Image 1 (cartoon, rainbow, N blue to C red):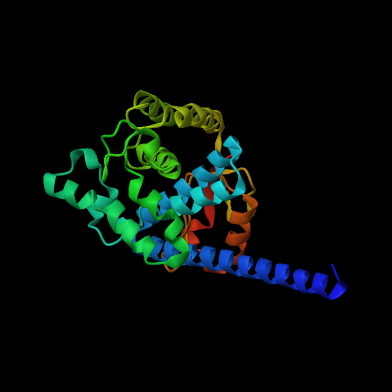
Image 2: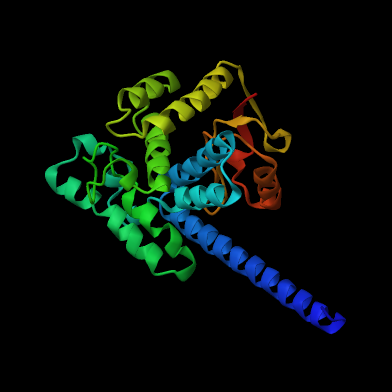
Length: 273
């Protein structure tokens, strides 16, 4: 290859890398903007989405999934319930098992609404099928398409499990031990058995952490690895970090950049470490 041809090839490769970085950044910016809007409109829903995203990150790292799978699960988790935005509060925060017939009809529409919203943004199309199918059951009794087993997209099977895990704790008020039992009891009916086996290990790690003593400390003293038991909210009402997550360095950097905007009531938080 001649020198000028080599230089031209290098220039093209650099251009492709720059385009990839810009596309990735635009994708992330778009998702973060959507989550900010959701968190402002409904703190419960915003907290749920952020917690599921963080547990998906932990789970994906434990399973040693490839980077593209980890990112797919993370962003799908952040957006899986976007179809609930604008629905009545009792549908967002309530227990679907005790909904009225009319409320169940409304609730069952949210995966389809979510898919439509996600499909409208070109950069998000790749996760729309996951959004649509995250309420399908492994035995084929879920909705909206009654898909069964591996016909359900892999990402949807993961997010169904992780989303229910969060709902059992923060919506139904179950303990970690009770939540693990419910998940195991629903193996093969609701959840993929292989995923339950792997996820049970992660729950056991959380059970070990939960046995440690909790402390109330200033937000300036937060460190990676601490389990956050208090929501951190900005003065404008935006949920910055939800309770129920394990802090990492990225979150603490984000926290530092917003330090001047944090609500006074959130400047001391309860953590486990």
